[in-house]
Length: 418
Image 1: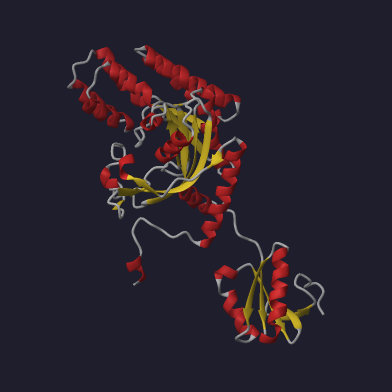
Image 2: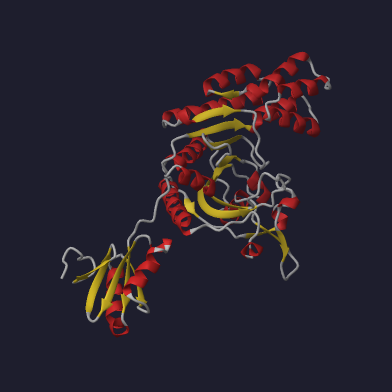
């Protein structure tokens, strides 16, 4: 019957995982803070108008409702748009450097049967006002370090650039439909379908040969850079090669280039990316846990032209991996549980408060059963696995240890048995 009150795609976070979530969140926010990022928050609900023209998120993929004023609202399906709006509203000077970090939930009503989850817990950063390779390098470096700092070493980043193929297709004057079809085939690395589709298009054989090599632009960065240079047919493509090589050079300087591979063929659902885009993987997991890139044109939607770069991490995917590999931080803090007879109430509460002032966790319960019954009940409760049980009776304090009750002077003095 309880399943009648649950919703597919939304899940509870049990206390063990929530403790881990808090610890990981605190560690990452401390990391981002050390690089100058300021933590912010945006509303859970956004106006439908904010997303209505974003074809990267279909209308059917939004959770919509109407407020009492008749305005259509949506549960926030993306974090970058609201953060960009906030930056534009509060920092109208387009020359300002702005660094924000956030932790939030986003909501998407995915139509794909393979994607059940509809509520995603994200943590991420957005870096506004800097269009340099060093900015991109910092963002990618923080994505890598976000996993390394949590003991995950099996990490790699696939780094691409939406401009390289777009600038090629623009030069060849492809229609939107032709671009979309070729992008799909290139992302799937389906050379046979690309070749069949190109046969239908009036293109010189040399240009077809260039397109057929696009799905192969992935792997070791320096090798891919050489291949990219050989395929350039215009200045904009050459600029992409220069830009992505400078970003990689920066990652070499800071010692993180070894985690990066190039893949010029993948796309991102969010169509606001304008330059680099990247996905972060834990190598034994098939799905990316990090998604990010540069979105230099998005802020213009809010009237402030401003370059920007950022990423978001799917925290619960990371926690699932860490749990499977015994990497999760555990709540091992001891809990002092004091049971008391009614006549000892004042002493029990005073004792508990003294423990709390010293940073301990202390709970107090009136004895309603025998000592043995209380011990059995609490030992069976997973929430009290770290508990030490004490009993205040007849003016004496007892500590329970393996079913034995020892009289002690004070809590913490078990070695000084009376």
